[in-house]
Image 1 (cartoon, rainbow, N blue to C red):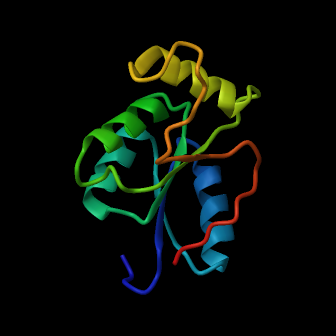
Image 2: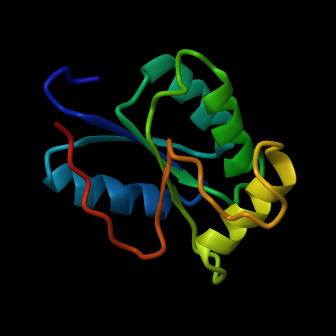
Length: 131
């Protein structure tokens, strides 16, 4: 990892999406690495400790929720910001609300309040700033 560039890890099972993120964000001065799926992504997150993770939800080997939960359970990786990127037609808020309501005991069932550590995208574009 180049110490002068902020590193973004794109965890995605579609190589074309990794290439697209690398092209767009690379032009903005970020170092973009790709992981072909959740298992490889989790391994790279633990080894590389990127500045940001772009995380697909729907992957065949390990889904994005599992990657996210394991990241947040690990002292070394729990502070890494995550942006969930998904092509699902459903609103990410609905998906997230159902996920949290069913898996997090501190939230009431049906309460769609997102975890304050993560940012979630509803569109194709995000402006990413680092201090």
